[in-house]
Image (cartoon, rainbow, N blue to C red; front, side):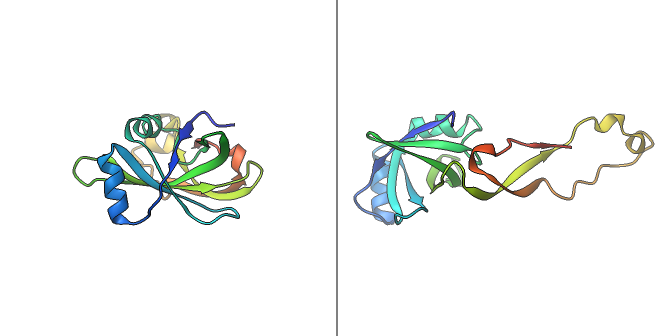
Length: 147
């Protein structure tokens, strides 16, 4: 399953005023989308969210969301940052089934560029796409595509 587990709490109110109040409490507001249920406003401890975010495995990976005794699989779709301090301001999560096909962007990394005959003769590597969108099962998302 997932390496990361997010412990969240459900917020009572939604909107910018409620989000500011959550941030004053030292939490990061977010919204849980998708599935048979509607959108649910949630919040998470800012320090715990920062640790999960900076592992590099939050965005684009299957994550376990825990609320009390209930757990579900989610994918982090978006994280918004403060323009000056780079602290996370808001996050969006999307409910998924582990066997569900999802469309997700995966980063492309290049190896052995220096061994290429064209680059040895003075050519350049022109990267047209830094990420490729894949249709893949949620439990088989690759971390990267190596070319």
